[in-house]
Length: 136
Length: 120
Image 1 (cartoon, rainbow over the protein chains, first blue to last red):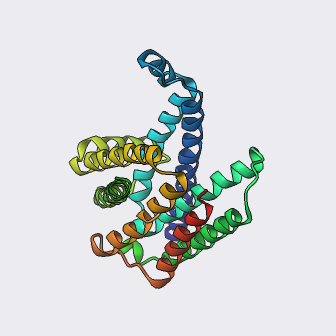
Image 2: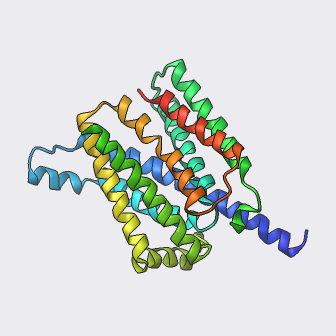
């Protein structure tokens, strides 16, 4: 393998790993945010302030700030028409998977068909990317 | 009111996406696995006015979505905002001049349809 080919493969690996980090930061950040908001008592200013300082809410906000910067870095590496649908679609699939397999949530067949459609869409969008995209 | 909020969410999210993509492509590829790469991204976010504007758009979109959830059911809110991905693809093609082929359009359509199906 030539040095040039090796560096291209490394770059592709880094882009894929970055996409996974973007998805996980978004999914886990939203989970913490949801837990923090549900646990919080937003009856008045003092209780709202206490809720904002809760570890779950703070972790959620920090992870979503991290998601924002990681997504910016990801967008510097390739076309938006590939990167955004793929990361968003995978986010829905991971969230659905966590709900079903971790929290043992019962979902309908329609929900599973929806996840399959999203996976098929992610595959199509991901495989539609070509080397010419990076030159556009 | 709910349709106004849907329009605000879709336009602000798509606007934020296209601004971030345009500015970061101008900035050049960032290696997020190196500290210097992350520093570059944060510096770009605060140093480029259009990137700051994109973060503002994202904030407007977020608070509009929270407001939409208060006045409309989740089964309406999530599928409606899924149209953002189609809007993103249109902006990518006509504003950023990306090559969006038939396979990619089909994939984006399937993802949007899937989001509609998984909505409660």
